[in-house]
Length: 482
RNA sequence: GCUCCCUUCGUCUAGCGGUCCAGGACGCGGCCCUCUCAAGGCUGAAACAUGGGUUCGAUUCCCAUAGGGAGCGCCA
Image (cartoon, rainbow, N blue to C red; front, side, top):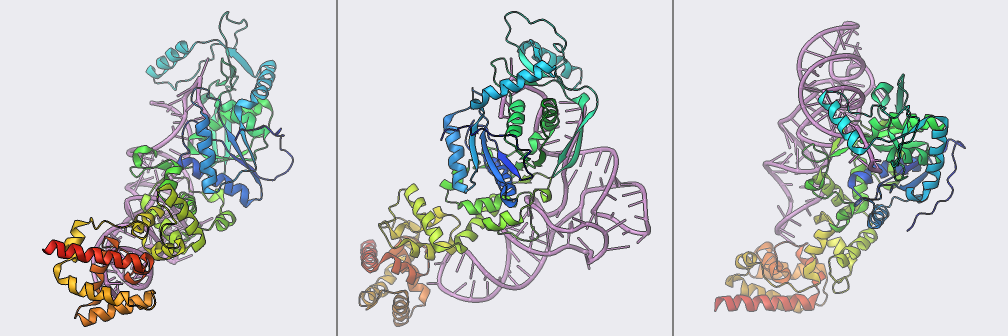
């Protein structure tokens, strides 16, 4: 999907809320990015406003089409939809140049000819002196151009005074202008920098609330100064706390999955992921489970907790299990079908998926668990679990199992109730407890020791397959005994 | 180093000056249920970082300290 510019107009129009998610396409869609998008989206939806998707691809070196695609696929998977976009900054170059020209003409910005090497040396010297590394304004009052050097454009940041960021989650945060330097607006190759692009776009697109990660808080006063220089309205900000890994360090690959699509591939339901994410930094009393509608109606950025939160995979597991248990059967079935295909299991080669869902929804954490656990209902098990076979398919059980086989074969109806009765009756006849016969039966039919209730299990496998597997197990016992 | 942000059970959090010897959830322990695994029910252990203030009274307000995080790029 290529972004097309739909002539965004400055939105002083109304107080209708407009938020945006502006990822840079330099990799997959990060779980932290999803939460930022979620909060931003929820805020817009809650207020009946609109939500914009903008791709910040001004870093020509690192931006890729695959990343853009991954972002779109990820957002669609979790169900975060956008009303405008995806816009692309690279398609708005003309606009940035226009704004830059105005800034230069008014003297609010100036050309800087310092080389990267010079800047690096400057920073090192400052750091060595224990100073805050920043541009020293060497070209601020330069009159003439330097031959053969493509200059960058720098903002003439005020030296005096201060900037206050009105932040919905932090309150007012004030920065002294003396701490800020003249940041680069336009690179020597003509592309706008992140700060410049963001500010121009947000203003042009009429973004009323900028909801983004905490890591941008200290960048905000600089952006506000750009806005003031351009003469555009300053939006309301909300800086969300970061998501940390279990060890308190910034969430990264070594903490496990950070790519949203990896959660999809592991068999998580998007609603569970979103539910987990919304509770990171936000709460509504003691409520743990939120439907999409509830999230929208109850969410409020101003009650977001300012402290960073650690990502806890265990709680996500629990939530996913909750959703598996309580979501509508049709919903889970649909997700399971997709997941089986993803895992290379043919959903058609077994019992109806609704039945599989009903049998496993309470004993599975992920869709993947269901697929793995129900494999025996789709493919014949190999009785390869040596331990289970040795423990449960002993010679002594051969005769009771054979009797059970006969009873099962004679059943007029292949229903859980009938099957249960047969097992129960044969067990009694053989002087065994239900479980003493049930577990060997389970191993014989499923190849393992874990499955839904034995009657349900047999029903799912079907009579023919169950009897065949029972026969195979009996042969195995006699063979092993011979 | 400088600037900014943050600090309640292991984790996510409730709490918005007295209702708190701090509540819920995940996880963990025990018991019950039980044909396996789960689910479920009951139950237990587990926290206001530290030090100063303010106040009749602080988990709640203020200030330090400590700890954690972020930013300080022609990355976003």
